[in-house]
Length: 305
Image 1 (cartoon, rainbow, N blue to C red):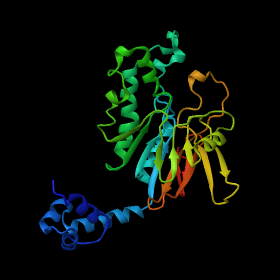
Image 2 (image 1 turned 135 degrees about the horizontal axis):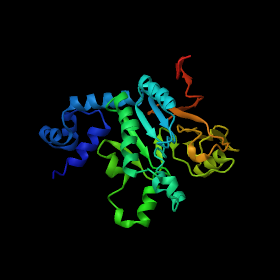
Image 3 (image 1 turned 120 degrees about the vertical axis):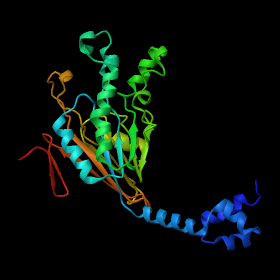
Image 4 (image 1 turned 180 degrees about the vertical axis):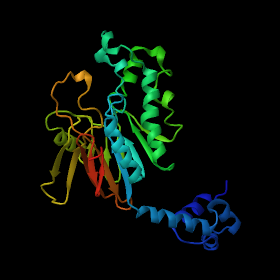
């Protein structure tokens, strides 16, 4: 390896020097510079593209708690129409996309509650009705992030009780998310959209947004609880130093069969983030859906009026 390699690459990345100037600084031939830094013209083009991207507002759609197959089809139809129109740069599945009741510890020794359910069927129908639909209505270069929620983590808990199934029933083994270009965020992991932390959700007390912002000490958006809530924490010594925690609604059926008509505070909806990569500054919008219908930017989505 050339002793000049590291210095050449550093100068090519951090300066606007052309190949001739880099060769003079390093004390090597232009041919050596080209070998390790490529052409000056291509570097200029790449830096120009990178700079432009930094100042292009990035559009992200946050999809919380679908809990497939406990879905409302008319709700998902309106959300899918929005995704098609909005043309996001990124889709973030915020966890609990699959309910996975057939391997739930809550249903252990309750065969009636699991009657007719199959894990393979859950995977296949979720892929056909959710993932492949979204892939068909978004651009091929759309970033796709799949966060593991507590419901997806039921797979890991089930494997811990039945280790002989390791490598057989896993999420990625059946949905091929990694191979398809999805970024997988592990259970209790964190994803960043600009200066916003995206998580599935860790707390569910009455004031869960207050708990999240106090623990994360930053701007955080989460789901998990199925009802929207927001709390702002302000620094007593710096009025500009404040953080917010926002809980999004859910995209599942808010009256599922297993609730047995018990009253709950679940609300339907999802989130939109628009951020500027150059600064990380963002705006987070919570979209509330009522009876499968909502409005955004002057457009109505949902059933015919």
